Amino acid sequence: MSPKCPVPPLQEITLSLVARQLIHTLTRVSSEEDVALPFAMVTSYYESMGATSDIFQDLINLILSSEYLDPSIRYYSMRLLLKENVKTLATGIFPCPYYGKVLDLIIEQGRHLTSLNLKGVWVKDEHLTLMYHLIKNLPSLTVLNIPYIANDEVLKYIGEHNKVLKLLDVSGETDITEIGIDAMLRGNPQLTQSLTVVNIGMYGEENIDHTDVALLIRQLPNLTNLGSYSFVGKSIYHIYNSDCPPGFKTKLQYLHDVQTNMRMMKAILALCPMLETIYLEEPDQGVLQQVKELNNINKIKLNKFQCHELHQLLDKIGYKIVTLMLSASQGSFNFTRIAETCRNLESIEFYQIHTATHEEEIPFNKLEHIEIIHGNLSPSCLKYLMTASPNLKKLIIGDEIKLDDDDMSRMVRRYKFENLEGIWFPNAPRLTRDTVELLMECCPKLQSLGQLSGWRFTPDDMMLMRAIIASTNTDLVLSPLGIFQQGN
Image (cartoon, rainbow, N blue to C red; front, side, top):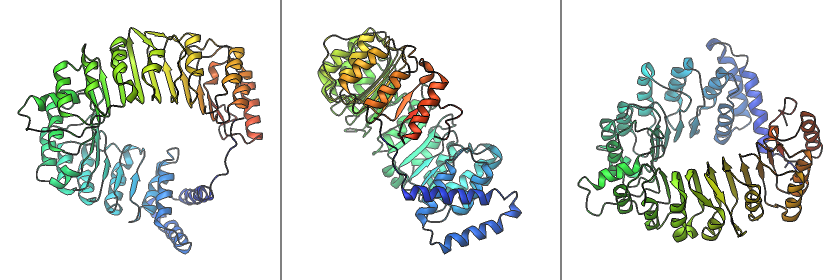
C-alpha cells in the first residue's frame, strides 16, 4: 500500500499559523498611512513572544514564495520581516510598479544579506540607478541572482563593492561586453579568487561573445561552472589558440558546447581536466570518442548525436557514468548494451529516440530514474526497462502506453516495484482504475501517479479514488487534480 501521510512537524504547523495571522493583519493595510499601527502591533507581539531571526527568515521565505498573495501583502511582509539577521532573500515575482519600492527596501534594510535573488523584479532603465546603490550597500553577498538585469555598469559596481561573491547569475538577455567583465575583475583579486559559478548568456544563443566569456575563464582560477552559456568549448579554444599561459588549466566541472569540432575538443581535453559533466550539441564525427580522455566524467548530456558513437564511447567508460541525458538521436539505441556497459547508471532521460532496441534482459541494478519522451518504445522494450530496474524510483514515459491492466497486473505482482515513488504515463488509453488500485496496493512507496487524464479513467473514478486516499490518510497524489480535489 502507498505510504501514509506523515504527521506535519510542529514547526511547520506553527510557522503556517503565524504566517496566516500576519497575512490577515496586513490585508487591512490599504495605503502607506495605514502601515504604522499594524506594524507596531505585530512587532510588539513578536518581541513579547521572543521571535528569533530564524523565525523571521522562515516567515519571509514562506510568504514571498506564495505568489498567489497580493503583491502589497508580500511587499509589506518583506518590509516588516527584513531584519538585520535575515541573511537570504528571494523576492519572487512582483509587478512593475513595485520594482522601485522593492529595491529601495532592500537598500535600506538588507545590508546584512549574504544571498539575494531578484528573479521576478526585472530592473531596467530608470531603476538601474537603484540597482547600483543596492550593490554598493550589500558588500557581504556570496550569492547574487539578477537574470536579465545586468549590464557593464552593474558588473563594474559588483567589482568595486563585492569581494566575497561565490555565485553570480547574470544570465538571460543582457548588455554585457568585455568592458563590463574587465571592469568587474580588474583590481579585485579577492573577487577573482572567490567566484566559482557564473551563470551568463542564454541557452543556444551567443548573445555574449565567446571571446568575452574566455576572459572570465582566464581571470577566474576557481571557476567551476558557466551555467546557461552554450559555447564554452568555443571560448576554451580561443584561450588555447591565443597565447595560452604555460601550464594553464581550468577547474571547470561542467561544460556545454554546440557544434564541437576536433580542434575544440583537443583544447577542452588540454585545459579542462576536472570536467565531471559534459553537454555536447551536434558534435562532429569523432568528438564523442575523445570524451574517454576526461578522467572525471560521470554525467553525459547529448543533443543531435549518433547512437553508434555513444555506444562506442560507453564501451570504454560506461562504468563511470551515473547520468545520461540524451535527445534527438540518430541511429539505433540499444538498451541492453547500455545495461552491459553502464553498471552504475542511476538516471537516464531521453527525448526523441530514432530507434530503440533491446536483446537479453540484463538488469540495470542501480537505475532509479527513467524519463523517455518520443522514444518509439515497443511494449516489450518498456517491460524490459521496468522489470530490469529493481531500484526504480521514478518512471515517466511520454509515448502511448500499449500495455493494458492485465499486463500491468502480471508485472506488478511479480516484480513488486518496492522502491517506486512516482509513475507518469500521460498517454495510456488501455489502463483503468484497476491499475491505479493495483499500484496503490502493491507499491509501498508510491506517492505520485499521473497523468490520469490520458488513461481510461473517468472523473467519477478520480473522485472515488481521491476519497479513498483521503479516508485512509494515504500519501499519494493523483494527477491532474480535479476541481473538488485542489486542497488535498
